[in-house]
Amino acid sequence: MSVTPEDVSKLCTLARLEIGPEESADLATKLSEIVRMVGELQAQQTDGVVPMAHPLDQPQRLRADAITESDARDRYQENAPQVERGLYLVPKVIE
Amino acid sequence: MHTDTLTALSEALAAKKVSAVELTETFLDRIARCNSELNAFVTVAADSALDDAKRADERIANGSATPLTGIPIAHKDIFCTEGLKTSCSSRMLDNFIAPYDATAVAKLRDAGVVLLGKTNMDEFAMGSSNETSYYGPVRNPWDTTKVPGGSSGGSAAAVAAGLCCAATGTDTGGSIRQPAALTGLTGIKPTYGRVSRYGMIAFASSLDQAGTLTRCAADAAAMLTVMAGFDPRDSTSLADPVPNYSACLETPWNAIRIGVPENFFDDGLDADVAAAVRDGLAVFEKLGATIKSIRLEHIGLSVPVYYVVAPAEASSNLSRYDGVRFGHRAENVDDLLDLYKRSRGEGFGAEVKRRILTGTYVLSTGYYDAYYLQAQKARQLIANDFKEAFTDVDLVVGPTTPTPAFGIGQKVDDPIQMYLNDIYTIGANLAGLPAMSIPCGLVDGLPVGLQLVAPHLSEERLLKAAHYFQLETDWHRQVPSDFA
Image 1 (cartoon, each protein chain N blue to C red):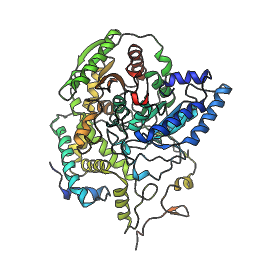
Image 2: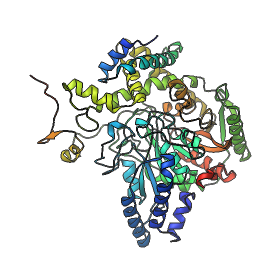
Image 3: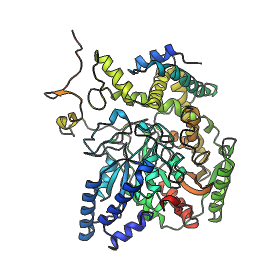
Image 4: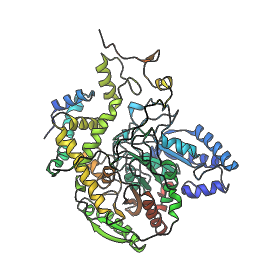
């Protein structure tokens, strides 16, 4: 199975990733090689095998529904490109 | 002094033959002289390192020191370090100052280590040669035209060249063991969940595990004793108590059974590497180990399984980089979608884009069952093979990599060839098993690694076998001549 430049464009939309026109052809070629390589898996008989959920077969741990962290919004927002009054700014979403 | 083991430096500090400040100055001087040639460090924290060292000297003076107090180390730049740039060697995080410490970082800090700085790596840990870094490739101290391996290549080069005494790394498909092998170091990837993933920037969460790159197994034991343990902030952290790994090295050797996967010695393995690995096995035999051939029936599937599971998890984990809350943000955008797409397009390098798109592909409608679900089933088969092997043997031992270090630029345009570097290491990640690489020879002046894999939570067995091997051999004491 090969990946076409159109497929790459669709994947880029799904992944919210902009790529340049010069990257598109190279990505199509290399993704095709990767998909061909991982395609070897199709030949493996796996009927009745339970897909692995955790390498040590452990269940997801739960914790009490209690507040354990204190507010650190200001500190975390020091890394934000644009904030105002504690809010993250983005381009206008609603007209 | 810069080529001494952590264990030796710890003793020298305790005996007050050297102070932590003197030791730190020595290593900072090494970094200043050698880093431009190797590109191993991306951030040097000289001022805070000297502060750490002064505090360490106070602890040593007042009797509250631990074996790690005053030891100059480096962290792979994937670990969050409060107040210090944490870039994951990506343009995306080139402006990111971590607001908190990773748990592994905090534990080592509490033990009194001196943090010299942060080491270069493949971008978001995606690579096996350290060539995908936004800050450029790292050079192998054994031959600066060669790669040091990856993704923890900066940590490997820094320890091998004596720019720090020990370093942390992370291993998702071999990213500690492969660079350890290519630079003549001891690298350990503990059991999945043994060291907390909190504050360690996520790549593939069901595979990622933190560990160390050191000069010998005793040094790894000292580091791991501090780093390992339960962390309520990591939902897959293991609650099992942590033994004192250093103390277990001193216990008497009991003859072990070693399984050698004969299918690791098929076509892809360099003949000289194979010979060095066989010599390594002979050392264990001399120590009284029983060597027997085993077959890991499904291990051949590990590369394809990995290149479905890891990109799938990465595509999900890396969706957090949106140009809004932290990280790179594109300028002059049209709308929110344009902001996301361009911030990500500009922030990520070529290999990271390939993996995000591979992950998006295998998780997309119509392909999920054929790729992702099938890979998780094949992953179970690989884990079952190891489980079965461990009913009959105590360790699985073989080569860490198919070849010694290869040339910078040699494989960078061929992802599949690059991915095959991890053919022997990926299995332990897929099965969550602890594994190590220890030096077992030199081929044309380049180090070769011997890989040891043990059952879940058997780090003691692993470290002890490596330690006894190193009492019999001196491969781990070899130092690249230009950095001796």
